[in-house]
Every structure is written in C-alpha cells, then in structure tokens.
Amino acid sequence: MSANLPFIDLASQRDRIRPQIDTAIARVVDHGAFIMGPEVGRFEEELSAFAGAKHTVSCSNGTDALTLVLMAWEIGPGDAVFCPSFTFAATAEVVAFLGATPVFVDIHADTFNMDPASLRTAIDEVKATGELRPRAVIAVDLFGQMADYAAVRALCDEHRLSLISDAAQGFGATLDGQRANVFADAVTTSFFPAKPLGCYGDGGAIQTQDDDLAATLRSLRVHGAGTDRYDNVRIGMTGRLDTIQAAVLIEKLAIFEDEIAARGRIAERYNALLADVADVPVLAGGAVSTWAQYTLKLPVGARPAFQSALGKAGVPTAIYYPKPLHRQTAYQAFPVAGNGLPASDGVADQVISLPMHPYLSEADQDRIVAAAREALDADALAAAS
Ligand SMILES: *Cc1c(COP(=O)(O)O)cnc(C)c1O
Image (tube, rainbow, N blue to C red; front, side):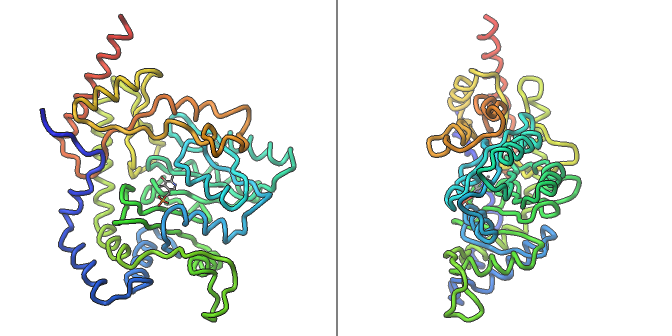
C-alpha cells in the first residue's frame, strides 16, 4: 500500500522555488525593516500589475481585508450586508463583528456562488421591513470561480449598494477575461498558506480602483493614522502585512499564473475521468477558476462511505462546508432571504473535495480517480441491492 497523499502539497512548491525564497527571507533579515519594509510596497505594485488594479493595500489577513473595507465605508449597527451562507465564516463574521447585520442569500447549486434572484429577494425584504439600511453586498468566489458579477453588480447599482468581492479562494480567476475588480468596489483576498496564492503565515490584500478608498484603507491599517504621525484621524487597527510575507509572496506571485494553469489542467482531467460517475464541478461559460477546491456532489447519504473508502486508500478528502452559516450557532439568529436557503442546505449534504494543488502528478490523479470510482461503484451497488 502506498503512502497517504497530501490534500494540499505545499512542499513541492517550496522545493521548486526554495533558493528564491531563502534569498528573499535572508534579504529581509539582513535589512531588518520587518514592518512596512521595501518588499511590501514592491509586492503591492506587482499584485496591482497582475490583476490590472489601480491600488493594492496589503494587510494582515483575508478577514481583516474585509473588515477594513467595511470600516472604510463606516458600516455598523443598523446596516444590512448581504452575503452567502455557504462560505467560510469570515465572510459574515466581519459584518457581525462591526455590529451590522449579515443577511444570508442563497447560492446556485451548480456553481456554489451567490444566486442573484435570492439576492433580489433579500434586498426587497430588508427594504419592506424597514428596520435595516441596505448598504453592501459581499459576493464570494467560492472554490476559485468568480461569482456572477454582472448580475450582482446590476442589483447593487439599482439599489445603491457597495460591492465587495471576497476573492480569498478565487484571486487570480477571470470571467470572460475580466477580473473581479472590474465589477466590485473592492476585492479582498487572503494569503493563508493553503489558499491558491498563499504566504508562509497570515496575510491578505485589498484591491480597488477608488483613490479615496485606498487612502482610507492605508490609514485604517495603521491605527487610523493621519498625515501627522501623532494625530490619528480615525479608529483603525494593526492590519499590516509583514515584510517577510511580502518577500515570500513576490516569489510565489512569479509562478502563480503557471500554477493556475496547472490547476486548470488537473481539474479538466478529473472532470473527464469522473463525469460519468459523479456530479463534477460546473464552470460558467468563459470562467477560469483558480480551483481552490475541486468539489464533487454525491447523492445524499453517500458521502460518509465515500470519504471512509478514500481514506482507507490513502486519499484525503475535505468537506467544504458541512453546515452553512445560517445553521451555525453564532449566526442562526440573522435573517435569511425568502423562506430559507434550499440550495445552500442541499449542497451542504452533498459536497466533498478531492486533493487539488498544482503539483499533483498524473499518477497521483489516477490513484485518486481510481479510489473515487471504486467507492462510487460500491455505493451504486449497495444502493441497487
Ligand atoms: C480563507 C477565507 C477568508 C479569510 O481569510 P484569512 O486570511 O484566513 O483571514 C475569507 N473568506 C473566504 C471565502 C475564505 O476562504
């Protein structure tokens, strides 16, 4: 029996760029500017160039990236922020953290991304109730695929709402060749090590075309600093990206396009080898995903046996997400669109993610596919008997 496979293999990437990383970290240790050193500004420029964004404001993590934007817009008690429930907790957590109200919106069961029809329902309901001021939408590029920004933006324009793209999983993705910053007022991302573009610790960034927003964000990430160093002009936070992480990210960004392409090839191969036995992920036409996760949908009830069969074959799997946020203890009192979120509830019982990273060899892909096919066949047999 061969060894267990990793779910995400960060070691292969490290080995590929080891000399560059070692040199970059040593350079920071030598110059000693650990906070806001020269690599931070250089990385921000390179990330702006990568995405065609006017401004990049790097920061401490992907959660603070969201928080900083909401703070810049002075969102707080009495404000409604619309977001999906089928996402990582941070998307809604930041809203509640600032005293505002997350209003949960359903997703499309095929793309796992925000359903504009459900968003429209949620906005109408908040307006009809009259208790909260609708302020902003946070759309999530779940598993690496961009949300339906054309439709979401149109609703935001119609109702004068600001739009954040939570691109922690989908930074680097495109839709018809366009990036999220074409549609969103702010794009936020995370450099948590397991994200498609990760660093060696915590990190994050915000991109925007808006000069005033960028200036406010730069102030907020250092305690609300003004032009006079000893006159803070607003309440902010310690939200900077470490220089060492910026130095690491410069080296990782250099190979990022190549890695996105590799992820795309692996996802296509998985699709080709699994489509006849499982519900494989669906991309909207014109979408390039960063494949933060490769997620299958299984018949309800089939997942536990599938997961344990793959585990026995040394193939790790993960469930993103077993419980949508509106079902979780801390979030269940917040409003949901319409009469509930049937698509979010439905996929939560079906999803399972297979190993996905740019360095997955064809041999390992074949091993994963064989284990998955065997588990699904056994399942089908059990169901038929
Ligand atoms: C990872 C993630 C975040 C938070 O990023 P951190 O850097 O861990 O704070 C926010 N939103 C989504 C969708 C994520 O996947």
